[in-house]
Length: 408
Image (cartoon, rainbow, N blue to C red; front, side, top):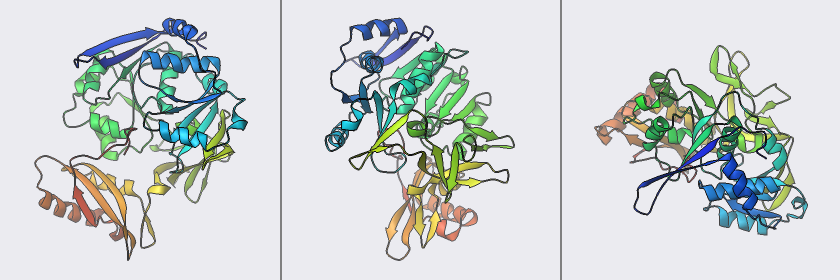
């Protein structure tokens, strides 16, 4: 598996029983030696919990090398994935070498997505320059596997924190001369707070984000403090495997995924992407389904005058206020323009008359007074939002809770 890859290393940052930092590293040669000693399971398909540790990655690569099928999942999802497998007839999958990923990204319902292992791995080619990366996606997430294999293929190095620490990330980026940062917008928002030490990020060349939309205020903050760092949106990794993005030369916030009708299509303002060659099957509602030719992403788009589009929110997140479909992301971007609003989450709440009303959870600055800020938010929103978009309920919270995958 590693024959065509240059030499590289993966660095692990953990803590011992006394809470002191422990740093270790492993090279491709050591990986290969450990894999050759490792005994893979004889089962034809297993749920596999991957962790940011040497032993866990050795087991993962051993499965890939031996073409044993597995389903990547977190320890939190293991019981659910096991039940899905037990309730599903997997007979049709047992003769193929597949890697599966547990996800709810495109439909809102738990799904297992299967790719052919050989075609999945074949996408990773040796790079021109070594990639020195730090990744803040959970190990069972396909984005983590993508970064891991891309780094190995480039002959670079990858830093993994056992416990994700947004503020400590600055020290690790400086210490290991990191060029590429991979994280969700929610984690980036934690990193780039008012306490951010931007001087420690001189080695960064690119910030790659995905799984959520990047708030306008966060984008502006990064561009202001890191003008030389490029930003790359990694989209639709689980099923579509990061399709090539073509940006509008006049407005880079608008883009296309390849050629219309061949790589993408739009139906009822929803984006559909062409199935990649490696995508084979889905498990949904306890049934094994062949992957469709077109993947419904669940993402809503708007077009500009040049025929390019951008994603403005998920269909499943739309708030129905008296028949009007409201995008939470649009309201969040408006409210974040206020300096006193540090973070916000907008969502719908059932209402007997309107169907739903707009609600907003607000993380405010330390010096703000809730009652005064609430009035300021409402006065500001009246000027910027339509009547149906106005937040009816405003709640002040200490933090916007993130999911186990570090997403909202």
